[in-house]
Image (cartoon, rainbow, N blue to C red; front, top):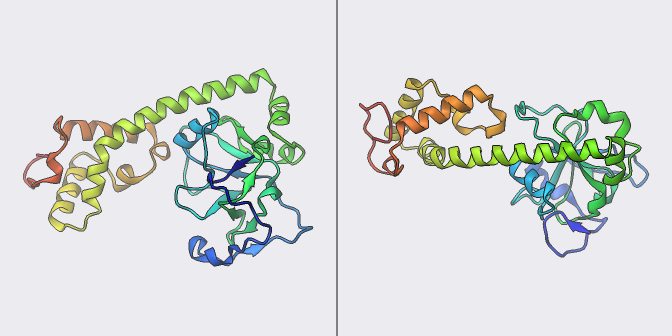
Length: 254
């Protein structure tokens, strides 16, 4: 059995998630014992997906979240995944004693719940959840999903996606080393330094979304523009941004 967050507390069907309304921003509702629950999915991002595909993921919920967010195949994410990174599927969602989150097509569960890893599967990135909506409901576990999706064909899709995710993770890590100090200054509230960042962004046709969005939520052309701007404007030591900012130069790192 796998715990959603690596803790040892046993799950309880009486978990009261209503106290986490502050987290969802809406009134949550416990599912009735005989109320059906659709197959649920979770989008966890490239780094966590690499860990999952390598059987090393120890936490299904967010790093500090007390609840696990999941969604139905009908839910539309408020972003575009330009890398089609794939997602997790909870084939036996009632194991988690889910609640309606108060947001349409979104469910939550306690991050402390135990889930049988055999019932949590990977849906490859090239397969859309909506195309599988009528199929997933009849699939009991990950082994059965593998067979439905072609056995060896599914295995090859997993291998392909894992390699692509690892490459994306390296790309993300490299750019994050450049962008993190810039984001920190941009969000610092220091008017002079924020203005310097805005000037640099304007000169390099970089937007706030480019700087602050999740890497795989940006089109490749935007990612390349941001990378080029960061490399062009940052000295090798990349430490100047923490010091003084030259408002007259072409870069806030000078």
